[in-house]
Amino acid sequence: MAEGLYARLVPDDLLTRFAIDPQTLKGPEGTRLVRITAPADKPWARVEVRSSTEDRDPALLVDVEMSARSVPALAFVQITNPRAARYGIDRDPEGTRHPLRHRVAQRGRGDPRPERWARARAGEARPHHAPKVLEAMDGFCRLMGTELYLIEPLFYHSAILYERHGCGYLLGREVMEAIHDGFAVDGPLAAGLDGSSPFRLPAAADTVRGRSWALHDGLAPSAWGGVKMYRVAGRPAGISTFPGGIY
Figure: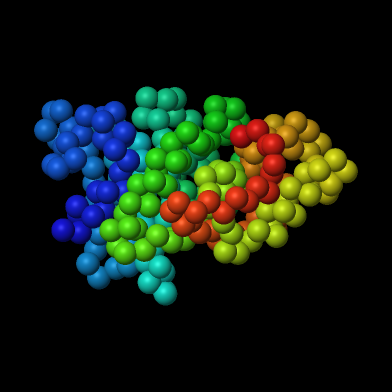
């Protein structure tokens, strides 16, 4: 019963793309490609989707949890292309692999490795997949009897992506607006785009990803944090803290 509910978090087009049977969650070769972890005694669940059992990383990873006030929360989303080049930025210079949340906590620690810059140039996010994940979460929440859920964006670019798909701010809108003002001409964040690293080129102020990488590189360690969002299916919040910004 619970597994069938959490399977609704997988967008239909992803099941079609990988030829996954929505009932058995198996691929064409009869192997299970959707992994659901939902401990009965925990307020969270994780859904992982792979295109093949040989994939090192899931193409989609979704963490959901129930907040203290019993409001569903989309706690974490990771979307990758299993066929794309892998740059290894999930490992530190010593080769130890760290979860993304740990890497977020380590932002601004100055990792100069060339693969980090290559990953930035390749594009960290895949914004065209976000609407499908949010729509799947909409349907999941309706089955639970609610249309509102919370979202915690771990990066600046995630928050912009979510707001462009109808999400509003429960906390932190002032943080987002201050960042936008900071990247304006003569703003304090724009002044830090001095070319001292590949992530701090002046042109970074003009794009969502450029700003996000600069912030992650430690441009202003205290500039990002405390942002909590929400989404109500069918009721877009209509907020834009970076109007006209190119993703």
